[in-house]
Amino acid sequence: MNVSRKKRISAKIQPPADKSISHRALIFNAIADGKAELKNLLDSEDVRSTAHCLSTLGIPIDWSQGKNVIITGKGLRGFQSNESQKSLDCNNSGTTMRLLSGILPSQSFPTTLEGDASLQKRPMGRIIEPLTLMNANITGTTSGTAPLQITPSNLHGITYDMPVASAQVKSAILLAGLYTNKPTTVVESEPTRNHTELMLQSMGAKINHDNNSIQIEPSSALGSVSLTIPGDISSAAPWLVLGACHPNAEIQIQKVGTNPTRTGLLDILLRMGAQLEIETITDSEIEPMSNLLIRTSQLIGTTIAGEEIPRAIDELPLIALLGCYAKGQTIVRDAQELRVKESNRIDAIISVLGAMGAKIEATEDGFVVEGGHTLNGTLLDGQMDHRIGILAAIAGALAENETEVINDAVSISYPTFWNTLEKVAKV
Ligand code: S3P
Image (tube, rainbow, N blue to C red; front, side, top):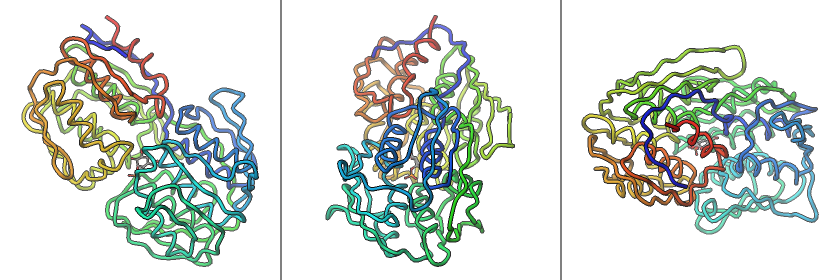
């Protein structure tokens, strides 16, 4: 796709539904009892991967009403083996693979979880280790990657200190904890997104949070929960960054989920001096939601590290772009997790922004950007990583001259991204 800078941007956008919450709404309702209506469920490739795995496991999912999906849960141990399809394909989705791994050891049949070339490179030892401590039979390749073989076993509760701050790992352990004989406790090094805890609690699971430890009690049943999925702050991020960096822009972004475990980018934007307004519109649903307004801003560089990293993990590629338009240095540290996402995102960020003339250097656990160097449009490779494809497109919408983006993979999280960019960036 080709993209170039427009003179003025004035737009109102409703970003697509939250991907993390959409996965969870499907998976958790699949192991609950009865029907749930999921309004505004994200219809993207990753969420379709979850839905497809669940359908193969015998869970009825009705997409006939468009974005309002009806799912019928079959109970905690209600998955069925599918004789004609013994392995489940998670495609590109780490969330699908890691969350299902918490549930499948307690079903009555063996399963194999596989993924695409990117997912097969991603670390699964981080779930194999704690689940094995819980007595699960789960094995990967010798290098700790997918495909994963899972056979039935009786789990027991553990206390586990997570070596990496990962909501996917936390969720796999908490889900497995539903099936144990005694409580399971996960201790986080830094707080990560808590959608799993909030949704399981709303379904009747007993979860206690104490500082950085989360304890779940074994459960005999979950109640289904109908909900409206808020917009994804990670899909609001491209418009926030475009609006802040463009010389003549005003963008309203509506109904964005603003769970505090996800709002690192908003704090970072405000600290960098962005003209950002946040209007909270609901605190009453399971997840808080806000309208956002971003205007052309004079940005200053900042340092992002420590507990802010998990709260902005998927936005760090776009934060590198913010750094290009800020005065002084922007430094990201403690973000080595970026190296094991859908691509090695530290290298991918450097290759995209470096090709455009940015002054940016990789470090082991992040990057350093020197702002104020003009970006020039060129041919950019999104490396089949949706967050990198979107970074390349937004960089192209800010740079001098024309940019062409290949291998953008935006349909993983944001299938309508290019249409929206076309509308937003119209002269
Ligand atoms: C996710 C958690 C994060 C995030 C990913 C989605 C989730 O990964 O990067 O896009 O839905 O739990 P980690 O938990 O592995 O950091």
